Amino acid sequence: MRELKYGMFFVLLILSLSFKAYSEPSRGWVDDVEVHRLVIVVTGGVNVRVKPELQGCTSQSGYGQMYASILPEQPGLDKMYSGLLAAKMSGKRVSLWLADDKCTIR
Image (cartoon, rainbow, N blue to C red):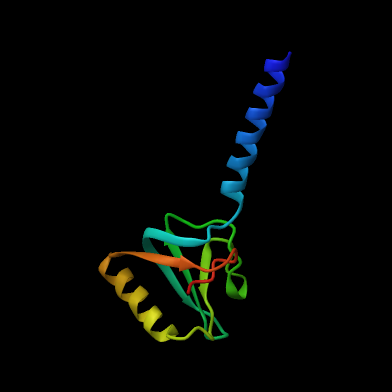
């Protein structure tokens, strides 16, 4: 009986960790991704969709949970956009720094 309790606890722990990993957006570096789509939003910021796709982000202007965002007040926004556009056009892969659980690129 005691072994069953510990076994059940272990299974529940693994399931909860797995669910958390897939339900929350990443923070920190997202390495070796392909720029799939760039969208300039009405506020002047940029939404970025990459492959493999992100999940659980809060994008600007309601673009959905698969878009990371560069906010309009981000210093160097134009340079960041240029670099991402060049990567998209050339097929090069990039790394992005996600600063928070909304997937804000910094």
